[in-house]
Length: 337
Image (cartoon, rainbow, N blue to C red; front, side, top):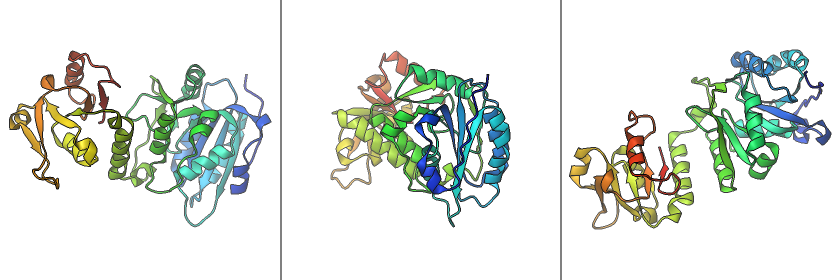
């Protein structure tokens, strides 16, 4: 049986900031930031309408100054969604320029009232079981961000409680080029939040040239990842080994602080050519003599390790080598790949 309908409309930015009343709370708010997404929205909203979740849901959309008819497309779905028992709240602004994904997400959250929030990009398509399965998982794992299997743990399939978001958030509103999802994720980890994965396909991710993710440079992501690694892991270690004497391992070494560079006792690898060279010399160092870090076979290296080899890229060889050393992830090694 579908839940009773609730009709709320946020016509503008001020209304969005006001948010829903506590008495209006639903089980799940589907949060969708929108910017010039006309060509994707029908498929996206069709996916919302086909959810097999039997609890109460609402759709909260914030239009970030679209110049196409995105808002009209969402509005055209109102009747069908409400017939399904999904209440709809839409707002936005008409400034000359968009204010960014983080801002649009925060606004959509502010105007919503679900106990849990299901984050959805306008160009992706959720599968019918998504909300149900993530909601069921959330009841068992409080204070966590929920995702599904796939190439990333960042944002496309996030699902979390409103109380945990309020503890961690809001999203960074720096705008274009700012990875607001990664910043939120790191802050969640800092505050003791967990990560739980529903190990099934829950969403079809659309990769295209206009995707907002392309505005964030690889250098920006790399720096944030290195900084977080140093903050959360390397600061606790007196020494460690970098597992990969190749390009990625050497890049990580060069990007570490001088203090953490001195903690690197060796690189390890399986490539005999690298091992036979004996050392990696840090040519750009201002130290004299220049640092020379030993390169050894992984069986001759000492834990703990920072693993700089991508998973599922070696035909299982990396995983077998790690298992042979009987190491424990999170204590004896961390992945950085």
